[in-house]
Length: 198
Ligand code: ITT
Image (cartoon, rainbow, N blue to C red; front, side, top):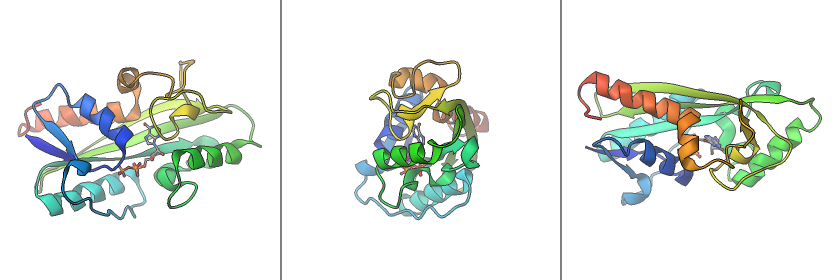
């Protein structure tokens, strides 16, 4: 079965393609489709936004869709940037802009800066809606380290690790990350649901 992954984020796409590699599903991205639609992510929770992405893309292409909404939740910032993680430093913010803003917000607060990455992954095919969550605890460090991954990875030290999420390989990230947990669980739920061979 071909499944559209409703994302414009190249980093997510690499991770999720690898997670679905051991299934009979072929994950295709929005970029491989002819039209790249604008999706208005105006939900207040990760699940609402993931569902908006999946339903919008299903309505356009009428093919099974997976989507995720994810972000960083920092304890000392009362859960921010949260669902606004992608646009923390403004509407067209780059990863670098967002990372700089995060460091500015934390600079006068005492260390450590506990935080978690959170992901809600969903599947929708016009009749069945399935969802799964994943989370990874860690902390934010004072300066970026590493070249892999995307987003806040260079600033995030997973609990029990001495390397940031940007210093580990994609394979290693896919063993521990919020997204890997959510999509592996989603795969299990899809299998249990019976309709979808994984
Ligand atoms: P799509 O909506 O097109 O999937 P997006 O980047 O806008 O792409 P989100 O709305 O889910 O995705 O926002 C997630 C943001 O949270 C992302 O841009 C990063 O800033 C941050 N984030 C989420 N998962 C991350 C990860 O694994 N590593 C680093 N940062 C992450």
